[in-house]
Length: 172
Image (cartoon, rainbow, N blue to C red):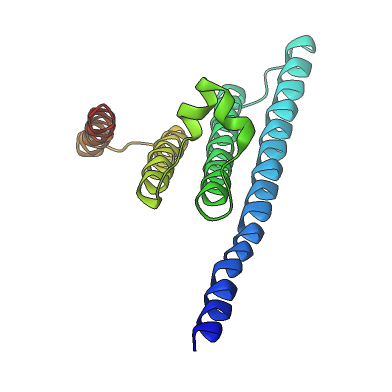
């Protein structure tokens, strides 16, 4: 029975390497999002520069420029979530990354010792993604009256309060 137990426990322990799939594809997804966001910014930059040099002023140029840049920031943040997730689950389930332990700055940003720390770091970035997405939606919103403006002001207030409490909790 002891031999069976050792074989079974060894198999269970080695099965943790299946996590490598999530790590690899999480990193791949992050790279793809970084590239797409960069291409979006590149594209709108080229379009804007051409418009400036041709002295044309396409309709909604400023709104489209800001919206595209905010959308790219949103993609960058989602890529960061995937990166943190990949890094964290690798360190939790496979092995500590030796190169990360030598750099104090990187170590603090990506230091993850348990699943709660990983969830906390990812949750904070996701909140930022939601705030950026909210800001992008607000650019395209038209307000019809004081009540809608009040709702808008209240939503900004609640976002600010949420950020305040996230920041306050991270210092303790």
